[in-house]
Amino acid sequence: MRIRRFRRQDAEAVSHIIKECYLKLNIGGHTKKGLKLQIDWNSPENLVKRAKKIKYYVALENNKIVGICGYDNKKVHTLFVDIKYQKKGFGRRLLSRVLNQAREEGLKSIKCWSTFYAEEFYRSFGFVRRKEINSPKDIRLVEMKKTF
Image 1 (cartoon, rainbow, N blue to C red):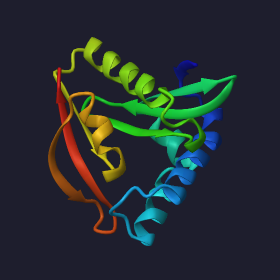
Image 2: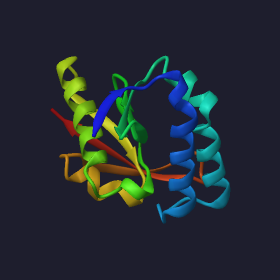
Image 3: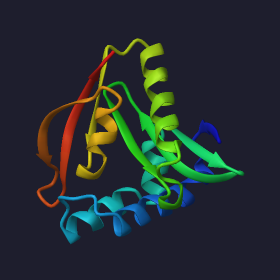
Image 4: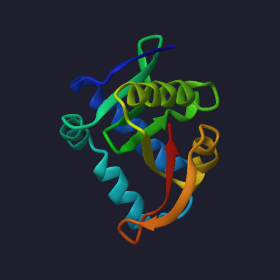
């Protein structure tokens, strides 16, 4: 397993992983319209645009991208791992990298918007549930916060 910074050419593979997760996992809370909004939000073009402000990292196994996670000065963004590679430590390594980088940059706390599916995962890193959010109303997430 290797983790490196996201590159423009990674966008297609990452977008595919995110789409598969939304379509095949029971993430909870999203309507069909909400799922489509999330998939569109994570198109290759949108990922490249957001990468100008968000520090994204990708996880690789045998030079194949299997996951992504990023952060900015307020929030963890876009943590997804290919379904075939879940429960093998890739998400943990990605989130650990992001949290360590954020802490090294001097952040005192960081938020995330978790799906219901991933809430326990974030809790295992010390994130605390703050509230449920509807953004827009067809997408239900949980706002969580970790203090360093």
